[in-house]
Amino acid sequence: MDGAALGRYLAARGALDSDAPVAVNPLDGGVSNIVLRVTTPTRCLVLKQALPELRVAAYWPSRVDRALREAEALRVAAAHLPPGTVPDVRFIDEENFIYGMSCAPATATLWKEDLLAGQVETPVAAAAGRLLAQLHDIQEPAVRERFSDDEVFWQLRVDPYYNTTADAHPSLRPVFARAIAHMQARKTALVHGDYSPKNMFVVHEKMDSRARGNGDESAPPRGLAGERDEERGNLERSTCAAPPTAGCKPALPEEAGYPPSSSKRSARSILLLDFEVVHWGDPAFDLAFCVNHLLIKSIVNAHAQAAYFQAVTALLAGYRDALPGVDWAELEAETRLQLGCLMLARIDGKSPVEYITDEPTKETVRRVSRFVLREQPGMDDVYARIAGETAP
Image (tube, rainbow, N blue to C red; front, side, top):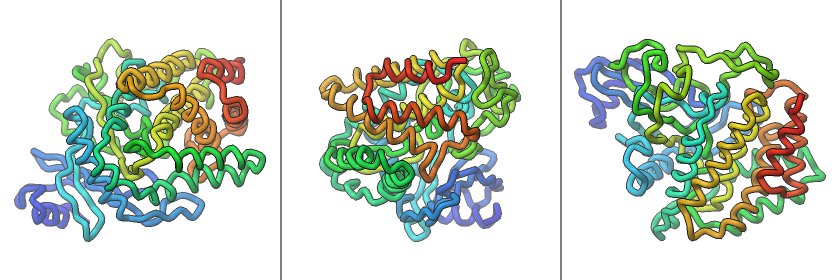
């Protein structure tokens, strides 16, 4: 649709004024969605429509009604989580599997881009852990019943991550089968299913002009997709190798919105996106999914490795402290099992991490993941293994 047609479409749903001039910008919705940002002089809206087949080399279909479940999950989350934690759902078009939501604030930065730039802040990781605990603490029977269908989780996570990777590593198939069986048996929480830094905007109370890149505090909010493809990282804009050599720090381009130091900004909250894989399931999956992203980045950005390890520790502590009644020893052991599977899946599954392209780094991740799967070590031992594998 062009701007005029979208303006009429949104006006008919009460989302925009009928006479407002409309600008439309396609956002990179990753491999699974069409995402558009629609702006007027006074309003900003993001539209999202699920694709029936994901844009990857392998055949990867999924139900398009997941967009409607996502919109409903956002409304459930908004009713239970702190204000500003998730975008506001402005309308739902059930016939076309589209929904509209509010844009991210202009002062927000995508956590994934910060992390890939080597800018790792433990308070942000701790906040991510607390937020996940709050999500998992939603225990209403009606929520459990509404999201008990886990078919989309199987389509978008279990089959492409676990089954595909097990096929590539037959000797590990029993371990992957055990991990799947654990998830099928442990259904105790509302699981996000894609709890990743690419789906978290960090909202800042203050940012200087260099952080904004243009010094214009009146600029419109950013689109929720951050105008970055979820499958393209930041290293392509860096002058460093992958992984960076010792002493080499990735570039922080002003146009990407990276402040030169964390002292120029203060984090207020996290805005969580992308609930399309939401289901009632195993909370260990969400924990492992996020920890996995941090640890893989610690392999890629070895020069800042200690900071990533501190972030993992802060995330797990934030989660544990926010859910004091949880059996942490059991959950932590389950998280390590899922972590090993997911780490290997991001190299040899259907959705390999996009910022690792060289074979030596892939092999490093494989070795670490096999160590986690076979030894089920504590996190300190995982940190030590990564440090040893990436030592010069």
